[in-house]
Length: 90
Image 1 (cartoon, helix red, strand yellow):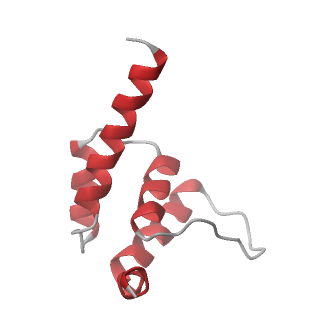
Image 2 (cartoon, rainbow, N blue to C red):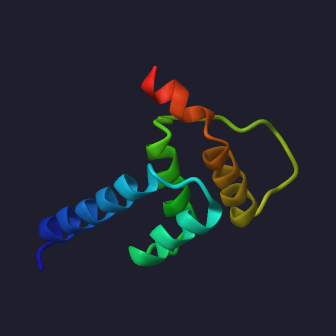
Image 3 (cartoon, rainbow, N blue to C red):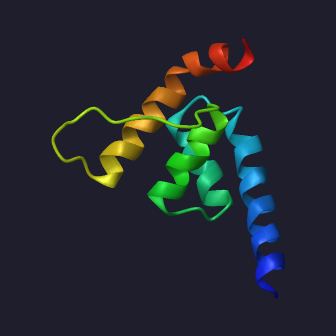
């Protein structure tokens, strides 16, 4: 498979995951989507959640060093809280 074909297949793969994430309202549903699409990298998971929430950029306030898992857990909590849904559709 060429690099272009591989990239397109990957983009379609992630697009399918994003479409399914929109309807998730629990941590278990989110985990199920990532498992179904075999997405295991925490950075990829965070980026897909940001894409769903229509977050193009963000900044971090200086804080103690957080692990990738801590940052992912925080992002999932924000996603589940759901106020982004009001802002994304407004």
